[in-house]
Structure formats: C-alpha cells, structure tokens
Length: 117
Image 1 (cartoon, helix red, strand yellow):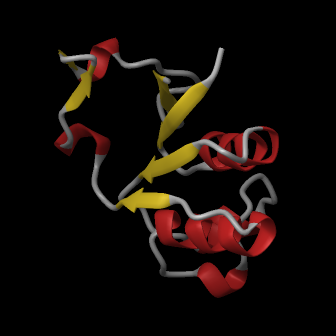
Image 2 (cartoon, helix red, strand yellow):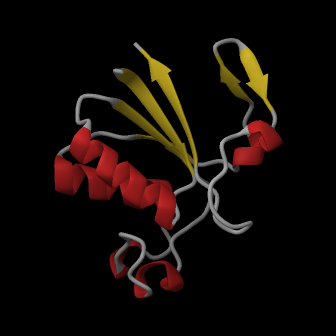
C-alpha cells in the first residue's frame, strides 16, 4: 500500500517519534503535523521526546519541523492548533473527536490519517 500524505495529530513522545520513524522509512510521503503545545523543560529532560533545550518555548510543531529538516532534509507542514478546533474530514466524511484513532493514555493521544494515492 502506498500513501501520498500522512497527517499526525499530536507531537508528544508518540507522535514525534512516529513521524521521525516514518520519514526514515517513507521519505517520499508528504507529512503534516498538528499540535498547539509548546516545548517545555519536561519534554526534553525525560529523553522520550526528540526536543532539545534550544527548542524551549517554541511550538512543538516548529521544533519538530526543524528536527526533520536537520536530520533528514525533509520539509514538514505544520498546523499550530488544538485538535479539537479542527474539523477532521476524510474522503468527504467528517469525524468527531471520539471517532479518531486514539492510542495511549488519556494524556497522550496519537492520531494518524493516511491518504491513499
């Protein structure tokens, strides 16, 4: 199965690491990441997220975009909004928050939508 676009909702540990792995495995795909949160000290100290001290105060999407550009020379599109503020439409059908693919605990959600070529 070949995909043209991947949209990752949430740039915490699960979303950020998923993006970096996907870019490594599927470099020709277009990627968009969506998150409203900013990098805090706890995001880089634990070691589960790819952020650095220099990313403090930046939107996670912007920091992750810089990481992708530096590590893989890959351009990633970003959206700095809360997931709840965005209408999710796939193949003409609008999805509510409850119907999104959710993995993880109540504090850590990963939502990925793939668009077939």
